[in-house]
Image (cartoon, rainbow, N blue to C red; front, side, top):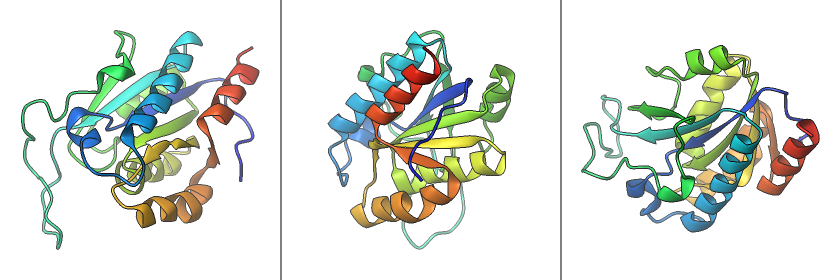
Length: 187
C-alpha cells in the first residue's frame, strides 16, 4: 500500500546514520540516504514534530553463524553524521541490539510525546530498520517507510524488506511523498 496519510503526531526515526556505518559498502550510496534523511529530519523539526536519531554502540551477545560485533565499537564509529544537524530538541537513542526499542527509552519517549506514527529512514533496511519496525508494529504504532532514505549492506535483503516485509507492517513512500504528506497534514 502506498502512503495514504501521516498522523497528526508523527515522529521521524533515523536509524544508524553514523560514521562507522555510512563508511561500509552498501547497496545504494549512503550519501544519498544521508541527504534524504537529513531533509526529512529538518522538515519534522520545522513542523515541531519529534526527531529521533538512533545510533548503535555495540551488539547483543549470543552465538551466530556470521560474525558480528558484540562489544563496544571503535572511537568515532557511533558518532552521528554531521549532515543530520543534530539539535538539542532531537531525541538520541543509543542501542546495543538491532532494533531501537529493545532496552532503550524509545517507547516511553514516543508515548510521552503522544506519537501514534513513525517514519523510518536510515541503514540498514533489513536489520535496524526492519527490527525497529516490527517492534513498533507490535506496539500498535502506524509506520511509514521513506524508501529512498534507506539502504542495506545487501541489495537482496533491502529488496526483500521493501517488497515483502514493509507492506505488511505499514505504508511505503518516497521522501518526497512523505514531505508532501507532511505539508498536507500540517498545513
